[in-house]
Image 1: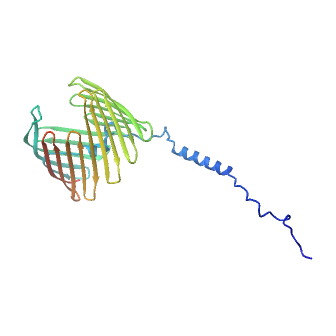
Image 2 (image 1 turned 180 degrees about the horizontal axis):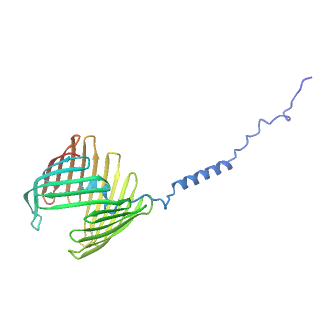
Image 3 (image 1 turned 120 degrees about the vertical axis):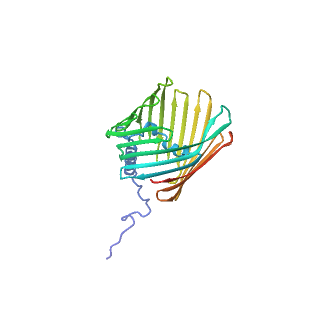
Length: 316
């Protein structure tokens, strides 16, 4: 006799499959979200150090404040040894003389500058310069420690883990102190006090800076009646765009500026245009390692003032 099995004895093939258990999945997802949020939460006891107060606009200034000039400029830097450098700078151009109105008078002007610089490291520098107009200037930078440094004419830097401060004493009878603090990994804020003894003027200023890999935004306001807003956006590794808004509250005058900074294979091109009708461009072309050709142009259509300059910069 053979064995037989009825449908009642075996599994019911028509029954629906069991439902999946989402309890464990939801617990795992919640744990993953919690871990991600914990990883993204900033550690306010371990914030990165901020930039110096005077450098909070450096990214915007690279595009908005190129070293424009009118005439001919020639510079050569000659290294004597690894730490000692000599620099010769010759400039021949025009000097603008204001007449009190829109008319501008230009007079021929030329200078020669000689510089001697000792740069042993970022912690020790001696810089000196003299020119044919009789101006002599010198600067000494010496860091006693990673958190304390001195500059003459006197610039004392004190740096903490997530803050820095500067005390400045200079000419003409200028005194100032500032403080800059990291609030979050991307946001810094601070303020400054300054006093100009020659004009018997003092003021208080405040500043904020927000930065990331792609942008830098800054805001500054002072009791002297000046408000400055700047924004720089890094389009890619070679192109940066920047904008600036400057308001003089006392005179109720405002100026807006848009600029660009392009790094090409053999040259660097910077330019800007503002609401006063001034258009400017600055080109640095690398002929060979250590030799750059520069072109500068500025067109002030409102005042009919046009400037053009060229030069050669030799040495690194």
